[in-house]
Length: 367
Ligand SMILES: *Cc1c(COP(=O)(O)O)cnc(C)c1O
Image (cartoon, rainbow, N blue to C red):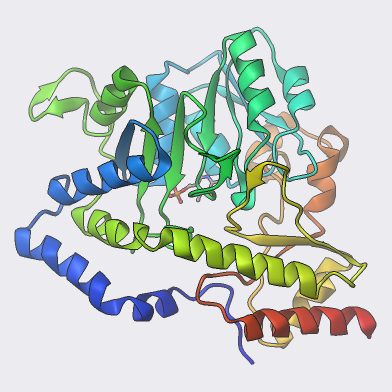
C-alpha cells in the first residue's frame, strides 16, 4: 500500500467540476487581481469565523508582517512568540526591526503561559501564539495577561482554520489574526494566498491599504505600502473550497480519533492530546516517538509519506545563531524536535490507509 503524506490531487478530483468552474468564472471576467471574487471570499471567510473584517493578501507570512507593521511595531520593540513554529512567525518580527523573543512550549505544543510571563520586559509590545498543528493555544490566560500588560495579542492561525475554544473560532480572540492558504493547509489555494482577520474597523482599513501600496482608493496613496494582494483565481477557488471545509475538518478529526485508537497500545508512542474546551482541527497529526528516525525510515520503506514539523525548533536554527541559545534555554522544544513525527492526514484518506500506517508503527516496535 502507498500512503502519501497529503494528496491534493485526490481533493481536486473529488470536486473537479466545481473547482474548474470556479477558475473559469474568473478568467471569463478577467477579474485577476482584487475585484468581485476577492470581496466575496473575504465576506465568506469573515462570516465563517464570526469576525467583522477579512483582508485577503498574498500569503500567510505577509499577513503577519502587515499586522505587526500597522500596529507600529519596529526597532527597539520585542515580540514574544513560540519556540516551535514555521519561521514566518519570527522572521516577520525581525523584518519590522523588532526582536523575536522565543518562549518554550506547554504539553500541547503551544506557548507556555507561565514562560510568556517570564519573557515580558519593558520593551515587549505583542505576543503571537501559534495554534500549532491545528491545536488552539491556551488563549484565555494569554488574553488576560495581554490585557493586563497592555500588549497586542496576534494569533497565528495558519494551521488552525475553524479550530475553536469553547465554541469561539481561533482568529476571533486577538487584536488581529493571520491565516495562510498555502496549498497543503486545511484550506488551501492553488498557489500562495493568505488573509488577516480583525474586529477593529480602523485597523482593517490600515491593513487593507498597506497590502495595496498604501491606497484604499486607486492613486490615493496615504502612505507607502507593499504589494500583497490575493489573486481572483485563488479567491474563487477558496470560496468553492470553504463550503467543504466543515466536512473536511470533521474527517480530519475522525482520522485523528482512529489513529488514537489504533496506536493506543503502543507505549513507545505518545499520541497528541486535545486541550480541554478546545477543538483541534488536525492540520497535522503529530506523535512523539521513541527512536523517531528509525521509525521514519521504516515507514518510508513501507510506502508511507511522513514528515517532521519541525526538525529544529526556531531558536536552534542557524538563522538565529546570533542569539547563541543553548538547549537548556528551551528544554521542551529541544527535546521534542528529535521525537516528533507527522503522520499522513488529509480529508480523502481512507480508514484502511490509517489502519495500514498504524499497523506499520506497531510492527516497528514489536520487531
Ligand atoms: C504556513 C505557515 C505560515 C506562513 O504561511 P505562508 O502562506 O506559507 O506564507 C505562518 N505560520 C505558520 C505557523 C505556518 O504554518
